[in-house]
Length: 71
Image 1 (cartoon, rainbow, N blue to C red):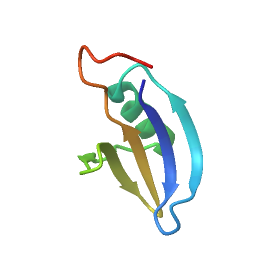
Image 2: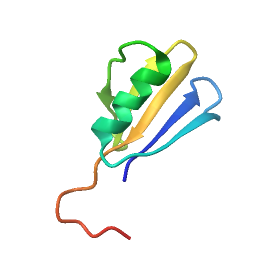
Image 3: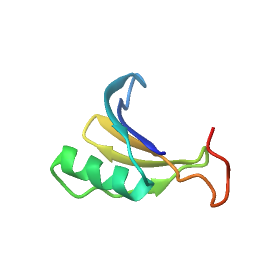
Image 4: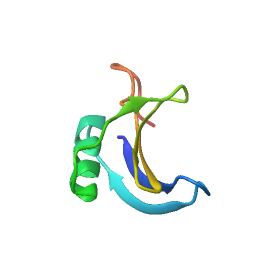
C-alpha cells in the first residue's frame, strides 16, 4: 500500500502525512486534491513518485510489483 506525504523541499521534514492508499494512483489523486491544483508527477530513481508544489514536495511510494508478497 503506497503512502503519500508532503515534504519540505529545503529541509526534507515531513510536513503532512496524507496516509496510506490502495494504489499509487489513488495517492497521487489525493495529493492533487490536497494541493487544490493539478500536480505534475515524475518517477524518481529511488522509486518514488514526486511532484513539486511551492516550497513542498509531494511523495508517493510506487505500487509494489504484481505478485509480490505484502509483509
